[in-house]
Amino acid sequence: MDRTDILAGAALGLLVLSGCTAGRAAKPVAEDALVVRRAPLSERFVLSGELAAVQSDPLVAPRTPMWQVRIRWMEQDGSPVKAGQKVLEFDNAAFAGSLEQKRIARSQSSNTLAEHAAAREVQLADKNYAVEEKRIAREKAETKAAIPEEIQTRREWQEAQLALEKARAEEAKANEDLAAFKKSSKAEEEVDKIALAKATREIEESEAALEELVLRAPRDGILILGDNRQENRKFQVGDSTWPGNVVMELPDLSQMRVDARLWDVDDGRIRPGLPVRVTLDSFPEKVFTGRVESVAAVAQETSFRSMRRAFTVRVALERSDPERMRPGMSAKVEVMGTGRPSALLAPRAALDLSANPPVALLEDGGTAKVGLGACTNLDCEITSGLREGQALRRRG
Image (cartoon, rainbow, N blue to C red):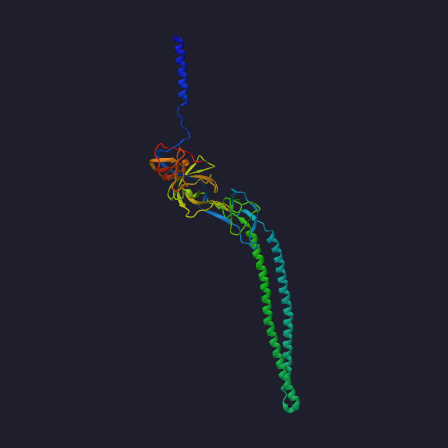
């Protein structure tokens, strides 16, 4: 074998060896690998919320005999309005029809009062005439009864005395009838006046109800429509609502706040006094600072038909922007919690927080019980169960 053959064989052996070595190369680490690491911990909670005015003038649906009222016309959401301007009108068709009937009823009551008064005047004249007639008859009887008994027969004198007694009784009865008629006439007149007053009062109430069906702005401002909770949207023309419901409002834009939602998974980690950063979705370049003012003690439904519940976190802003801020604008709220310069952190994506106690999902397919400290939206502090550099796997 010459030197050329030896060199060729050596080269072939190196190629085979190189191929075998390449086949046994270590598996590269994935870019999205989850690893326990030590890093500074800064608790930061991101909540979603919306702007609300600290003070506002609500416009509510009025109380009417029909109870529910339907919106016939309304100004658009966000429209600038002046004091006294009509901003909403409810349907008044039912009230207008009943008002005409009540006006007819009042006219009938007024005619009845006049007719009864005229009839009473005629009857009163008859009663007065009867009293006067009986008085004259009594006076004649007194004249005859005054004739001495000596100048007439005893029978004539007795008949004159009986006629006098009868005339006096008839006069007394006529006076009693007159007094009773006056008393009954007064009672009947009062009944007629009460009926007329009642009809008048019903008309006034209907007219006031018609006036209340038109809502007017109490002052200058920006009009904001209320929420129709049954439909989970803003009020629209054609919607029906109940008395007392806020259908629109005039907010004071000089002082705004943020009402954010806190889900029960992070309950207890946000407390009043923590600083916040607020970013409006409509103006992401502007950042407003503030503090957590209060956290609701009881979770409430997020919408009328929703089964999800959340705690309301009220955020007080250090300053407002009346030119840009409007109630109902969605906002992102970053709550800044406490922090530590060095903490052992594990990604939340590799933790099963629903287990009791929580477990970490190891890269080899196993699990490890862990002790947890503070958590952010991405990481949780590990107090026991894992070591720095340990590889984990993602849930699911």
